[in-house]
Image 1 (cartoon, rainbow, N blue to C red):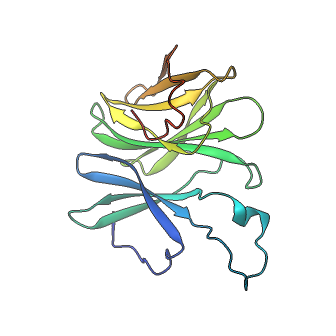
Image 2: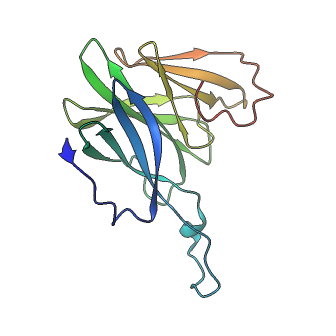
Length: 187
């Protein structure tokens, strides 16, 4: 991991915690699109979009070391996607993993997942599942797995879990979450 971050160049970005584990913190660096003032040029269509995950970083707050991870780009930039992320530890390999899933905002609810392993320093495709994240969200790490609220094509909400050792998905069906209008922050 490298030392420090140049915060001056990130002045128009915001940071959100994507997960933490064993003293390491995974943060997302997101573009901020503020409201234009009356003196600004009219914004481009892309500037009206909500903040979007641009990069991820793993940091050790104690040592101030930071490793920037560029996001994988499975689709062309003009294809709108929702992103779900997560961070956890694979005890069988003694390795930390960052998981990122991309759901196209139009069409069938399917999410394509990628994994970044800290030891190999590479992104790999895990595969596609038949569920979609309907907003940008971060998974909760518990029991060796990451967990997200997702939806199937019938708009039924489920919890999808990804075992970080086997990289296999499991579904917890039939959740009664109708009273939860925004279940985006984990469990």
